[in-house]
Length: 442
Image (tube, rainbow, N blue to C red; front, side):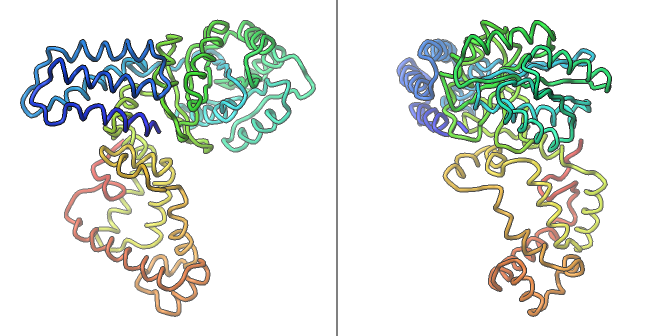
C-alpha cells in the first residue's frame, strides 16, 4: 500500500543526504518535494501546503544531535506530522448499549457489505460479542444474499425481511429480534448507490433517527482518493457519522483518502480493511500507518498478529520436539497454517522495517506455500511424522499425488533438512512458538 507515495517521500529526503546539518535551503527543497509527493497522492493542495508548512516550521532551528543525521531528523518530523494529520491516536470504538447498534453507510462498490461481515467477525472473535447482522438494503436482493453468505461464513445470525420495502421498519424490528435473542451488537448494512442521491441520504438519516446508533461508520474505497474525501463530507453533513473505514488498502492506494479525510470531516479513521477474507480487518493506528508510509515498517502490528495465533500449549509441545530434533513435516505444515492466518504475506513482510521496499516489486501471494502443502498432504501420517522414511519409491508416490516432479520433492527435502539443522543449532536458546518469535507472550 502507498508504494508510490513512499517512494516519492524517500526521494524528497535525499535532499538532506550527506548534509551535516539542516539549513533553510535544504529544508525548502525537501519541503517542496514532500508537498509535490502529497499532491501526486491526491491530497488536496490546501492540506498539503498546511502540512508542509508545519514540517518546515518544526525543522527550522532544529539542532541535529549526535548519531542522528539531518535526514533522520526530518523523517521523524514528517512521521509525527503524518500521524497527527491522520488523527494522532487510536480512536475509541463504542459498543455500549443493549444492544449496541452500529450503522454502516457508504456508496455502492465501496466494500460496505464485505466490511459489515468483517466487523461481525472482529466483534465476535476479538471482543466476545454476540452479533446480529441486519440487511437493510431494500433495493438490491443481491446485497441481502451477499450478507447472508457472509453471516454464515463468520458464524453469526442475520435478520432480513425480503418483502418489506421500509428500511426503518426493518431496522426497528431487528432491534426487537436482537433483544429477544440476547444479542450484544447489531450491525445494520444500509443501501448504497453509485452516486449520492437524496433518496439514499434521507433513508439512512431516517434509520439513524429511529435506532439511535452508538456508532455510524462511513465506509470508503481508499483507491478513489480525493473523490472519497468529497463523498465523506457529503455524508457527514447529513449523518454526522462517528468514524471512517478505509477499504481496499491492498490495491494501488495513492494515499489521498487516508491522509485527507480526518482533516476534512474531523472524524477519525477507525478501521482499515484489505482483501476479501473475513479476518483482514485492522484497527487504525495513525502512528503505525505513518511509519509504514515512510518505509519504517510496523513491527508492533506484526507482533500483535503473531500473538493472535500464538498457542502456548502447542508452542511448548513444539519446543520439546525441536529440542529433541524431532521436528517433522506435520509440525511444519501446522506452522505454515499459523503464518497464513496472520494475513497477506506481502503485507506482513512490509511490516518488517526495511523489507517493504525490498519486496515491493516481487510477486508474493497467499498461494506461495501451496506447492509445499500439496507435497505434505500427499504423504501418509507415518511419512509426515518420520521425514527420514522417504525412500525413492515413497517420493515417487508423493510426486505423483502432489503434481510435482522428483527434483522438486528432493529440493524441498533438502530445504527441510537445512531448516532442521538450523533448529538443532538453536537448541540451547530459549524459544516460544515458531522459530524467530522466541520469547513472545500474550
